[in-house]
Amino acid sequence: MSLWTSTADPAVAVSFTEAVRSNVPPGGGLYLPARLAPLPDVPRLLELGWLERAPALLRPLLGPEPPEAELDALLADAFSFPAPLVEVREDRFALELFHGPTLSFKDFGARFLARFLAWAEARGGASPRRLVITATSGDTGSAVAQAFWGLPGFRVAVLYPRGRVSPFQELQMATLGGNVRAFAVDGSFDDCQRLVKACFADGALSADLGLTSANSINVARLVAQVLYYFEAVAQLRRHLPAGPRPWIAVPSGNFGNLCAGLLAARLGLPLAGFVAATNANRTVPDYLETGDYRPRPSLATLSNAMDVGDPNNWQRISWLFGDEVEQLRRSLRWGSAGDPETREALAALAALGYAGDPHGAVAWHVLERSLGPGEVGIFLATAHPAKFEATAEAAGPVPALAELARRPLLSEPLPNSLELLRSELRAWRPEAAR
Ligand SMILES: *Cc1c(COP(=O)(O)O)cnc(C)c1O
Image 1: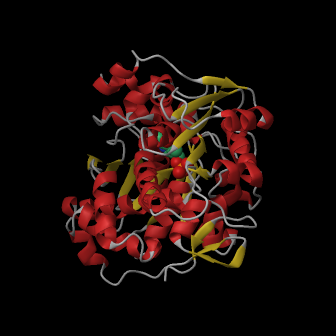
Image 2 (image 1 turned 135 degrees about the horizontal axis):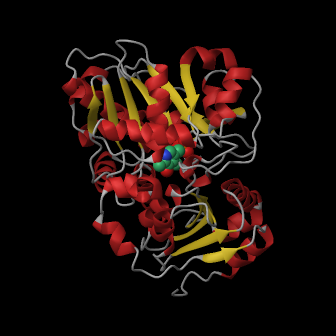
Protein backbone atom coordinates (compact mmCIF):
# COMPACT_ATOMS: atom_id res chain seq x y z
CA MET A 1 0.00 0.00 0.00
CA SER A 2 2.92 2.22 0.76
CA LEU A 3 1.23 4.76 2.95
CA TRP A 4 3.09 7.59 4.54
CA THR A 5 2.60 8.37 8.20
CA SER A 6 3.70 11.21 10.52
CA THR A 7 6.47 11.21 13.09
CA ALA A 8 4.02 13.10 15.32
CA ASP A 9 0.86 11.04 14.75
CA PRO A 10 0.70 7.33 13.84
CA ALA A 11 -2.94 7.80 12.76
CA VAL A 12 -1.80 9.81 9.70
CA ALA A 13 -1.85 7.70 6.51
CA VAL A 14 -1.59 9.44 3.13
CA SER A 15 -0.44 8.49 -0.35
CA PHE A 16 3.00 9.48 -1.60
CA THR A 17 1.42 12.04 -3.93
CA GLU A 18 -0.41 13.65 -1.02
CA ALA A 19 2.77 13.65 1.07
CA VAL A 20 4.68 15.40 -1.74
CA ARG A 21 1.98 17.97 -2.32
CA SER A 22 1.32 18.86 1.32
CA ASN A 23 5.00 18.69 2.29
CA VAL A 24 4.28 18.36 6.04
CA PRO A 25 1.55 16.34 7.77
CA PRO A 26 -1.45 18.09 9.26
CA GLY A 27 -0.71 18.73 12.93
CA GLY A 28 3.09 18.81 12.69
CA GLY A 29 5.78 16.17 12.45
CA LEU A 30 7.28 14.88 9.21
CA TYR A 31 6.22 12.19 6.77
CA LEU A 32 7.89 8.77 6.73
CA PRO A 33 6.86 5.45 5.21
CA ALA A 34 4.53 3.70 7.67
CA ARG A 35 6.27 0.40 7.01
CA LEU A 36 9.40 -0.55 5.11
CA ALA A 37 10.32 -4.16 4.56
CA PRO A 38 13.55 -5.42 2.97
CA LEU A 39 13.12 -6.10 -0.75
CA PRO A 40 13.24 -9.81 -1.56
CA ASP A 41 15.61 -9.56 -4.53
CA VAL A 42 18.38 -7.13 -3.57
CA PRO A 43 21.27 -9.18 -5.08
CA ARG A 44 19.51 -9.18 -8.45
CA LEU A 45 18.67 -5.47 -8.18
CA LEU A 46 22.35 -4.72 -7.57
CA GLU A 47 23.19 -6.29 -10.92
CA LEU A 48 20.85 -4.01 -12.84
CA GLY A 49 21.67 -0.59 -14.27
CA TRP A 50 20.39 2.57 -12.57
CA LEU A 51 17.27 3.10 -14.70
CA GLU A 52 16.19 -0.54 -14.55
CA ARG A 53 16.76 -0.71 -10.80
CA ALA A 54 15.15 2.63 -9.89
CA PRO A 55 11.46 1.74 -10.44
CA ALA A 56 11.84 -1.45 -8.38
CA LEU A 57 13.33 0.55 -5.49
CA LEU A 58 10.76 3.33 -5.72
CA ARG A 59 7.58 1.25 -6.01
CA PRO A 60 7.41 0.34 -2.32
CA LEU A 61 7.84 4.03 -1.49
CA LEU A 62 5.56 5.51 -4.15
CA GLY A 63 2.71 3.00 -4.28
CA PRO A 64 0.78 2.60 -7.54
CA GLU A 65 1.35 6.12 -8.90
CA PRO A 66 2.64 7.14 -11.42
CA PRO A 67 1.87 4.17 -13.68
CA GLU A 68 4.87 2.21 -14.92
CA ALA A 69 5.48 3.84 -18.31
CA GLU A 70 5.08 7.34 -16.90
CA LEU A 71 7.40 6.59 -13.99
CA ASP A 72 10.02 5.17 -16.35
CA ALA A 73 9.89 8.31 -18.52
CA LEU A 74 10.05 10.59 -15.50
CA LEU A 75 13.08 8.76 -14.10
CA ALA A 76 14.94 8.77 -17.42
CA ASP A 77 14.37 12.50 -17.72
CA ALA A 78 15.33 13.28 -14.10
CA PHE A 79 18.46 11.11 -13.89
CA SER A 80 20.25 11.89 -17.12
CA PHE A 81 23.73 12.03 -15.55
CA PRO A 82 26.03 9.46 -13.91
CA ALA A 83 27.05 8.88 -10.27
CA PRO A 84 30.48 7.25 -10.56
CA LEU A 85 32.21 5.48 -7.68
CA VAL A 86 35.86 6.50 -7.80
CA GLU A 87 38.64 4.63 -6.00
CA VAL A 88 40.64 7.12 -3.95
CA ARG A 89 42.96 4.55 -2.44
CA GLU A 90 42.77 0.94 -1.35
CA ASP A 91 39.38 0.28 0.29
CA ARG A 92 38.38 3.96 0.08
CA PHE A 93 35.97 5.29 -2.52
CA ALA A 94 34.18 8.53 -3.38
CA LEU A 95 30.65 8.35 -4.72
CA GLU A 96 30.56 11.43 -6.96
CA LEU A 97 27.10 12.95 -6.81
CA PHE A 98 27.96 16.21 -8.56
CA HIS A 99 27.61 15.41 -12.24
CA GLY A 100 24.14 16.96 -12.59
CA PRO A 101 23.40 20.41 -14.03
CA THR A 102 24.14 22.43 -10.85
CA LEU A 103 27.08 20.27 -9.78
CA SER A 104 25.76 19.06 -6.43
CA PHE A 105 23.83 16.01 -5.21
CA LYS A 106 20.80 18.25 -4.72
CA ASP A 107 20.11 17.78 -8.45
CA PHE A 108 18.92 14.21 -7.75
CA GLY A 109 16.16 15.25 -5.38
CA ALA A 110 15.23 18.51 -7.08
CA ARG A 111 14.91 17.06 -10.57
CA PHE A 112 12.79 14.14 -9.39
CA LEU A 113 10.60 16.49 -7.32
CA ALA A 114 10.03 18.91 -10.23
CA ARG A 115 9.08 16.16 -12.64
CA PHE A 116 6.90 14.35 -10.12
CA LEU A 117 5.03 17.55 -9.21
CA ALA A 118 4.55 18.41 -12.88
CA TRP A 119 3.09 14.91 -13.37
CA ALA A 120 0.83 15.22 -10.30
CA GLU A 121 -0.41 18.73 -11.13
CA ALA A 122 -1.07 17.84 -14.77
CA ARG A 123 -3.76 15.43 -13.59
CA GLY A 124 -5.65 18.44 -12.24
CA GLY A 125 -7.69 18.21 -9.05
CA ALA A 126 -8.44 20.62 -6.26
CA SER A 127 -6.06 23.30 -4.98
CA PRO A 128 -3.12 23.36 -7.37
CA ARG A 129 0.33 23.73 -5.78
CA ARG A 130 2.51 25.60 -8.13
CA LEU A 131 4.48 28.15 -6.12
CA VAL A 132 7.59 26.44 -4.85
CA ILE A 133 9.21 28.20 -1.92
CA THR A 134 12.50 27.03 -0.53
CA ALA A 135 15.22 28.09 1.89
CA THR A 136 18.75 27.22 0.91
CA SER A 137 22.20 27.17 2.41
CA GLY A 138 23.53 27.16 -1.16
CA ASP A 139 23.01 24.07 -3.24
CA THR A 140 19.30 23.38 -2.77
CA GLY A 141 18.42 26.78 -4.20
CA SER A 142 20.40 26.31 -7.37
CA ALA A 143 19.21 22.75 -7.93
CA VAL A 144 15.56 23.59 -7.31
CA ALA A 145 15.65 26.80 -9.35
CA GLN A 146 17.24 24.95 -12.29
CA ALA A 147 14.87 22.00 -12.00
CA PHE A 148 11.74 24.20 -12.16
CA TRP A 149 13.08 26.92 -14.43
CA GLY A 150 10.74 27.33 -17.39
CA LEU A 151 8.43 24.52 -16.21
CA PRO A 152 5.01 25.77 -17.38
CA GLY A 153 2.67 26.92 -14.61
CA PHE A 154 5.27 26.73 -11.82
CA ARG A 155 7.01 29.59 -10.01
CA VAL A 156 9.97 29.34 -7.63
CA ALA A 157 11.00 31.62 -4.75
CA VAL A 158 14.42 30.84 -3.30
CA LEU A 159 15.57 32.38 0.00
CA TYR A 160 19.27 32.34 0.78
CA PRO A 161 21.42 33.97 3.47
CA ARG A 162 23.08 37.00 1.90
CA GLY A 163 26.87 36.72 1.78
CA ARG A 164 26.82 33.15 3.15
CA VAL A 165 26.67 31.23 -0.12
CA SER A 166 29.54 30.87 -2.56
CA PRO A 167 29.64 33.25 -5.55
CA PHE A 168 28.91 30.38 -7.92
CA GLN A 169 26.02 29.10 -5.85
CA GLU A 170 24.57 32.61 -5.97
CA LEU A 171 25.05 32.87 -9.73
CA GLN A 172 23.39 29.50 -10.23
CA MET A 173 20.18 30.56 -8.51
CA ALA A 174 20.05 34.30 -9.11
CA THR A 175 20.79 34.62 -12.82
CA LEU A 176 17.85 32.59 -14.13
CA GLY A 177 14.98 35.07 -14.00
CA GLY A 178 11.73 34.08 -15.70
CA ASN A 179 9.66 32.05 -13.26
CA VAL A 180 12.47 32.04 -10.65
CA ARG A 181 13.01 34.72 -7.96
CA ALA A 182 16.04 34.66 -5.67
CA PHE A 183 15.77 36.56 -2.37
CA ALA A 184 19.01 37.45 -0.58
CA VAL A 185 17.89 37.49 3.07
CA ASP A 186 19.60 39.54 5.75
CA GLY A 187 20.21 36.62 8.09
CA SER A 188 21.42 33.04 8.40
CA PHE A 189 20.16 29.89 6.72
CA ASP A 190 18.15 29.16 9.86
CA ASP A 191 16.42 32.53 9.45
CA CYS A 192 15.56 31.64 5.84
CA GLN A 193 14.19 28.31 6.99
CA ARG A 194 12.09 29.99 9.68
CA LEU A 195 10.61 32.39 7.10
CA VAL A 196 9.63 29.52 4.83
CA LYS A 197 8.11 27.55 7.70
CA ALA A 198 6.14 30.63 8.73
CA CYS A 199 4.73 30.97 5.19
CA PHE A 200 3.44 27.40 5.36
CA ALA A 201 2.07 27.94 8.87
CA ASP A 202 -0.01 30.80 7.43
CA GLY A 203 -2.88 28.67 6.12
CA ALA A 204 -4.49 31.47 4.12
CA LEU A 205 -1.27 32.45 2.36
CA SER A 206 -0.38 28.84 1.62
CA ALA A 207 -3.82 28.07 0.16
CA ASP A 208 -4.17 31.33 -1.80
CA LEU A 209 -0.78 30.98 -3.46
CA GLY A 210 -0.72 27.19 -3.72
CA LEU A 211 2.57 26.98 -1.85
CA THR A 212 4.64 23.88 -2.02
CA SER A 213 8.10 23.28 -0.66
CA ALA A 214 11.22 21.90 -2.22
CA ASN A 215 13.10 21.72 1.07
CA SER A 216 14.78 18.55 2.16
CA ILE A 217 11.71 17.73 4.24
CA ASN A 218 9.82 17.01 1.01
CA VAL A 219 9.47 13.26 0.55
CA ALA A 220 10.10 13.44 -3.21
CA ARG A 221 13.65 14.58 -2.52
CA LEU A 222 14.09 11.93 0.11
CA VAL A 223 13.07 8.99 -2.08
CA ALA A 224 15.19 10.12 -5.05
CA GLN A 225 18.26 10.02 -2.82
CA VAL A 226 17.65 6.39 -1.88
CA LEU A 227 18.65 5.42 -5.42
CA TYR A 228 22.31 6.36 -5.32
CA TYR A 229 23.03 4.38 -2.16
CA PHE A 230 22.11 1.25 -4.09
CA GLU A 231 24.21 2.48 -7.01
CA ALA A 232 27.21 2.89 -4.65
CA VAL A 233 27.03 -0.73 -3.50
CA ALA A 234 26.37 -1.98 -7.04
CA GLN A 235 29.51 -0.26 -8.31
CA LEU A 236 31.56 -1.31 -5.29
CA ARG A 237 30.93 -4.94 -6.25
CA ARG A 238 32.57 -4.30 -9.58
CA HIS A 239 35.66 -2.93 -7.81
CA LEU A 240 35.65 -5.57 -5.04
CA PRO A 241 33.95 -8.75 -6.26
CA ALA A 242 34.13 -10.36 -2.80
CA GLY A 243 31.32 -7.94 -1.94
CA PRO A 244 32.43 -6.50 1.43
CA ARG A 245 29.78 -4.41 3.18
CA PRO A 246 30.96 -0.79 3.18
CA TRP A 247 30.63 2.00 5.69
CA ILE A 248 29.17 5.07 3.98
CA ALA A 249 30.12 8.53 5.31
CA VAL A 250 27.50 11.20 4.70
CA PRO A 251 28.46 14.89 4.98
CA SER A 252 25.41 16.24 6.77
CA GLY A 253 23.62 19.54 7.33
CA ASN A 254 19.87 19.03 7.44
CA PHE A 255 20.38 15.24 7.55
CA GLY A 256 18.05 14.53 4.64
CA ASN A 257 20.80 12.65 2.81
CA LEU A 258 21.57 10.39 5.78
CA CYS A 259 17.84 9.81 6.27
CA ALA A 260 17.57 8.60 2.65
CA GLY A 261 20.49 6.26 3.29
CA LEU A 262 18.73 4.82 6.33
CA LEU A 263 15.64 4.17 4.19
CA ALA A 264 17.88 2.41 1.65
CA ALA A 265 19.22 0.22 4.46
CA ARG A 266 15.67 -0.65 5.54
CA LEU A 267 14.95 -1.67 1.95
CA GLY A 268 17.68 -4.26 2.39
CA LEU A 269 20.81 -2.55 1.06
CA PRO A 270 23.75 -4.59 2.39
CA LEU A 271 25.95 -2.17 4.35
CA ALA A 272 28.22 -2.19 7.37
CA GLY A 273 26.62 1.09 8.45
CA PHE A 274 26.65 4.85 8.17
CA VAL A 275 29.08 7.46 9.41
CA ALA A 276 27.36 10.77 10.14
CA ALA A 277 29.80 13.63 9.46
CA THR A 278 29.27 17.29 10.26
CA ASN A 279 31.39 20.43 10.16
CA ALA A 280 31.67 22.69 13.24
CA ASN A 281 27.87 22.70 13.45
CA ARG A 282 27.87 19.86 15.96
CA THR A 283 24.27 19.70 17.12
CA VAL A 284 23.97 16.00 16.20
CA PRO A 285 27.43 14.72 17.24
CA ASP A 286 26.99 16.51 20.56
CA TYR A 287 23.58 14.90 20.99
CA LEU A 288 24.98 11.45 20.29
CA GLU A 289 27.75 12.06 22.80
CA THR A 290 25.73 13.69 25.58
CA GLY A 291 22.13 12.59 25.00
CA ASP A 292 21.12 16.24 25.13
CA TYR A 293 19.59 17.56 21.87
CA ARG A 294 20.27 21.27 21.67
CA PRO A 295 19.64 23.15 18.41
CA ARG A 296 21.71 26.31 18.16
CA PRO A 297 22.49 29.15 15.75
CA SER A 298 24.50 27.98 12.76
CA LEU A 299 28.21 28.77 12.37
CA ALA A 300 29.67 29.79 9.01
CA THR A 301 32.24 27.27 7.71
CA LEU A 302 34.07 26.26 4.52
CA SER A 303 31.40 23.62 3.85
CA ASN A 304 28.63 26.20 3.82
CA ALA A 305 25.86 23.93 2.54
CA MET A 306 26.17 22.08 5.85
CA ASP A 307 25.95 25.16 8.07
CA VAL A 308 22.82 24.09 9.90
CA GLY A 309 22.31 24.40 13.65
CA ASP A 310 18.79 22.94 13.78
CA PRO A 311 18.70 20.08 11.25
CA ASN A 312 15.18 19.71 9.92
CA ASN A 313 15.41 15.98 9.12
CA TRP A 314 16.76 14.90 12.49
CA GLN A 315 13.23 14.23 13.74
CA ARG A 316 12.89 11.58 11.06
CA ILE A 317 16.15 9.85 11.87
CA SER A 318 15.37 9.87 15.56
CA TRP A 319 11.90 8.39 14.86
CA LEU A 320 13.44 5.60 12.80
CA PHE A 321 15.34 4.57 15.93
CA GLY A 322 12.39 4.82 18.29
CA ASP A 323 13.67 8.19 19.57
CA GLU A 324 16.23 6.25 21.64
CA VAL A 325 19.70 7.76 21.78
CA GLU A 326 21.14 4.38 22.78
CA GLN A 327 19.77 2.77 19.61
CA LEU A 328 21.23 5.58 17.52
CA ARG A 329 24.61 5.17 19.20
CA ARG A 330 24.61 1.46 18.44
CA SER A 331 23.64 1.99 14.81
CA LEU A 332 25.78 4.92 13.71
CA ARG A 333 29.34 6.09 13.77
CA TRP A 334 29.86 9.84 13.76
CA GLY A 335 32.24 12.75 14.02
CA SER A 336 32.94 16.29 12.87
CA ALA A 337 35.61 18.32 11.11
CA GLY A 338 36.22 22.01 11.74
CA ASP A 339 37.71 24.21 9.05
CA PRO A 340 41.34 23.33 9.94
CA GLU A 341 40.55 19.58 9.69
CA THR A 342 38.66 20.20 6.45
CA ARG A 343 41.75 21.87 4.96
CA GLU A 344 43.92 18.98 6.14
CA ALA A 345 41.49 16.52 4.56
CA LEU A 346 41.57 18.44 1.26
CA ALA A 347 45.37 18.30 1.32
CA ALA A 348 45.32 14.58 2.13
CA LEU A 349 42.95 13.92 -0.76
CA ALA A 350 45.08 16.03 -3.10
CA ALA A 351 48.13 13.97 -2.07
CA LEU A 352 46.18 10.88 -3.19
CA GLY A 353 45.52 12.59 -6.52
CA TYR A 354 41.88 13.37 -5.76
CA ALA A 355 40.45 16.91 -6.04
CA GLY A 356 37.86 17.10 -3.25
CA ASP A 357 35.37 19.78 -2.25
CA PRO A 358 34.96 21.02 1.35
CA HIS A 359 31.77 18.98 1.98
CA GLY A 360 33.16 15.68 0.76
CA ALA A 361 36.37 16.47 2.66
CA VAL A 362 34.44 16.64 5.94
CA ALA A 363 33.07 13.16 5.21
CA TRP A 364 36.53 11.88 4.28
CA HIS A 365 38.01 13.20 7.52
CA VAL A 366 35.37 11.57 9.69
CA LEU A 367 35.43 8.33 7.65
CA GLU A 368 39.19 8.00 8.08
CA ARG A 369 38.85 8.38 11.83
CA SER A 370 35.91 5.99 12.07
CA LEU A 371 37.18 2.88 10.29
CA GLY A 372 39.27 0.08 11.66
CA PRO A 373 41.73 -2.14 9.75
CA GLY A 374 40.17 -4.11 6.91
CA GLU A 375 36.99 -2.02 6.81
CA VAL A 376 35.86 -0.59 3.49
CA GLY A 377 34.58 2.98 3.27
CA ILE A 378 32.75 5.16 0.79
CA PHE A 379 32.31 8.89 1.29
CA LEU A 380 29.72 10.92 -0.57
CA ALA A 381 31.30 13.65 -2.72
CA THR A 382 28.27 15.92 -2.63
CA ALA A 383 29.48 18.89 -4.68
CA HIS A 384 31.95 19.68 -7.46
CA PRO A 385 35.09 21.33 -6.07
CA ALA A 386 34.84 24.09 -8.71
CA LYS A 387 31.81 25.52 -6.86
CA PHE A 388 33.84 26.73 -3.87
CA GLU A 389 36.59 29.29 -3.45
CA ALA A 390 38.72 27.00 -1.27
CA THR A 391 38.86 24.27 -3.92
CA ALA A 392 38.12 25.94 -7.28
CA GLU A 393 41.73 26.34 -8.28
CA ALA A 394 42.64 22.70 -7.76
CA ALA A 395 39.48 21.65 -9.62
CA GLY A 396 40.46 23.52 -12.76
CA PRO A 397 38.10 25.40 -15.08
CA VAL A 398 34.50 24.28 -15.63
CA PRO A 399 33.01 25.90 -18.75
CA ALA A 400 29.42 26.00 -17.43
CA LEU A 401 30.55 28.01 -14.42
CA ALA A 402 32.66 30.45 -16.43
CA GLU A 403 29.63 31.15 -18.61
CA LEU A 404 27.47 31.86 -15.55
CA ALA A 405 29.86 34.51 -14.30
CA ARG A 406 29.04 36.67 -17.31
CA ARG A 407 25.31 36.82 -16.55
CA PRO A 408 23.72 39.63 -14.52
CA LEU A 409 22.78 38.86 -10.90
CA LEU A 410 19.00 39.23 -10.44
CA SER A 411 18.88 38.63 -6.69
CA GLU A 412 16.49 40.71 -4.59
CA PRO A 413 17.59 41.87 -1.12
CA LEU A 414 15.06 40.97 1.59
CA PRO A 415 15.15 41.95 5.27
CA ASN A 416 14.54 39.05 7.67
CA SER A 417 10.82 39.86 7.85
CA LEU A 418 7.82 37.61 7.33
CA GLU A 419 5.63 40.65 6.63
CA LEU A 420 7.78 41.78 3.71
CA LEU A 421 8.13 38.29 2.28
CA ARG A 422 4.39 37.76 2.47
CA SER A 423 3.65 40.96 0.60
CA GLU A 424 6.28 40.18 -2.07
CA LEU A 425 4.69 36.80 -2.66
CA ARG A 426 1.13 38.12 -2.70
CA ALA A 427 2.09 40.86 -5.15
CA TRP A 428 3.78 38.40 -7.53
CA ARG A 429 1.56 38.06 -10.56
CA PRO A 430 2.12 34.70 -12.27
CA GLU A 431 1.82 36.16 -15.77
CA ALA A 432 4.21 39.07 -15.13
CA ALA A 433 7.35 38.61 -17.21
CA ARG A 434 10.33 39.42 -15.04
C1 LIG B 1 22.94 20.12 1.16
C2 LIG B 1 24.33 19.67 1.15
C3 LIG B 1 24.86 18.82 2.14
C4 LIG B 1 24.06 18.41 3.33
O1 LIG B 1 23.01 17.51 3.00
P1 LIG B 1 21.81 17.28 4.02
O2 LIG B 1 20.87 16.38 3.31
O3 LIG B 1 21.21 18.64 4.29
O4 LIG B 1 22.38 16.70 5.26
C5 LIG B 1 26.14 18.35 1.99
N1 LIG B 1 26.91 18.73 0.95
C6 LIG B 1 26.46 19.55 -0.01
C7 LIG B 1 27.36 19.94 -1.12
C8 LIG B 1 25.16 20.05 0.05
O5 LIG B 1 24.71 20.86 -0.91
